Amino acid sequence: MGMLDVGDGNRLYWEVLGNPDGKPAVCLHGGPGSGAGPFWARNFDLTQYRVVLFDQRGCGRSTPNVADHDTCLATNTTAQLIADIERLREHLGIDRWLVYGGSWGSTLGLAYAEAHPASVSELVLFSVVTTTAAEVDWVTRQMGRIFPAEWDRFAGHVPAAERDGNLAAAYARLLSDPDPQVRAAAAEEWCRWEDTHVAVLSEPSPDPRYADPRFRLQFARLVTHYWANAGFLPDGRLLADAVKLNGIPGVLVTGRADVSGPPDVAYRLAQRWTDAELVIVGPAEHGSGHPEVTRVLREAFARYAQR
Image 1 (cartoon, rainbow, N blue to C red):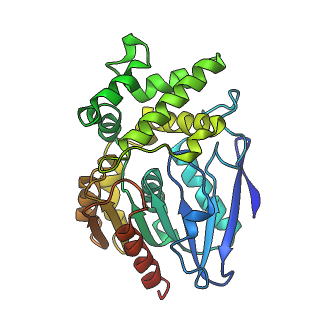
Image 2: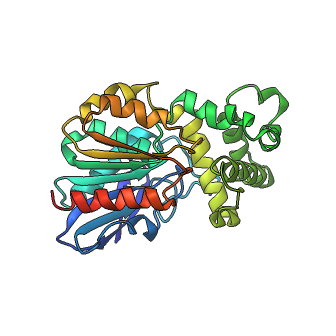
């Protein structure tokens, strides 16, 4: 484990699990801002894999942390995250690695692989999203049709003049307010909506990580920063450039009931990235917790361990 200086005053926390001589794999956590816990390695056979975990800029054990009000977000963009991943690969002396990501990590995984295809041996993504403006509008506004009362509370927290606009941007402004009480209240309401929209077939239950006020602020500030800017990606670029992934084997697994990341996103990608295997799991919601999603991921890693 260590701290890697990636410039702009940022230092990334990283660690390696598993077999030092195993097949390299890097895990790209979600959020943005969730951080990479050991659970990210649970679907790998650690006797066969060398699994790299790291906390993306601004979150987890990386420094500085955006939960601190004076941490500037100007140097926290997708292009800089992509450069960080390459710098970490080079720092660890890895030629190519399997890239594994979920939710926001699937967006980052696609962006990284399209920018550096020669660095990627395989690509395994779940709860697939590309963080377009339309996808952000869907999850922050259109999903109010599914959770109307909860959305009224979510939207009602921002100033009335901003409720018809970019809600992620409105929350980002609240989360940067000089008043710590304003920031804390916005983080709480944002995370309440996060708990809601990922649970369609089941009753929403609080993510235990949101019990920590500092985590809530870190998470909400980074999510809104990226969503307000549509992932800092030209609209439709990840889908248009998915042809660059041809020649890289991969798996896209998503749930039929994943309304936070609707299955059409993965489906459209698989039409252009023809070396991808698309798996849509009927009863699965957002995330990797469904047993069938877990099975697909583990089978993919077992298969790719032999390549």
